[in-house]
Length: 384
Image (cartoon, rainbow, N blue to C red; front, side, top):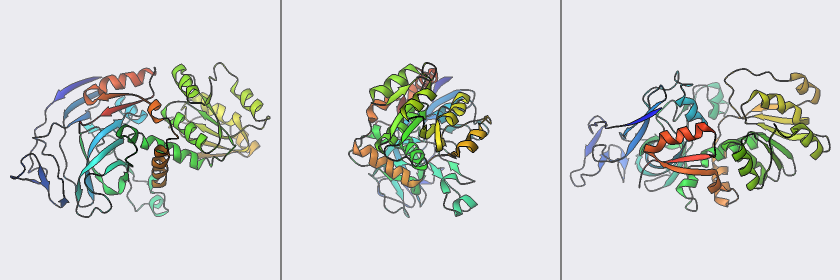
């Protein structure tokens, strides 16, 4: 992997903009109101471009003027997630159009809004739910647009947030309260994942929950489940993640050192767990999940498996288990995540392992790949 600086020339005419002579540092976008887009020739904003072959180039950000139903955001922070690492390793090259700006866990401030945008205006602090559904397929018609059959995931299928200025559809926006820092605001997307998972798992007060995998999503699932009054056990093999989970007040066990099935049975009077979240993405986790669940227990598969896995269907039959997949999130999950983050009941600052400048994205990727003492790394995308 390497990072190289590059300058990209731009032409405001190509972007469909007209330069304001009264304010030469700004360009006004047709159909937009109030603050307008920065002129790429006069802006210091930059972007990180994935170019394949484990290569990311940091170069000039070319602002796109917002259409009637779009907004332009000055991105403050963007988190690096597992999906970004998968893309970097080429696992999604069939889907990503290179060069592509990655990133979707973000916070920022609106600097321009299209004429048809309602409810949001320049100056608003926001985060983005990075899903752009077609609105016409059977899933959308049934009300499940978050798993649209033609879904465009912003930051994968279209340019993402690892840039200073980002233009997105207004329907993706969620307002951030002033009580949240911009760093904390960049965690709303992964918290929304956890809120969606816990909601589909129907976690209730006093239930016994096992979360397999203590990475950023697994840890957030555990923390969100705890806010619902559940007793939570995190299963994880990474020493740093185990230590952090315990420091945050969670019961955490290493399944390579502890008989996890015996632990769960001992602590539930041999009943088993009410809910098991499989977030490890491992074959061992798939094998274990059916052993841990109680009669008529729920198993929620959160991890993405690129290959089919062997599942103990006899156990599903014998114990009448229920299994569901949990993919991304819905608007209500983002609102729940924002409310939960603003409540102060989540130790958000402990989840952020560090903040890097855009030029430091190479080091950040390497650190996350190493699986060392890291949880979530944020990238500062602009100085404003």
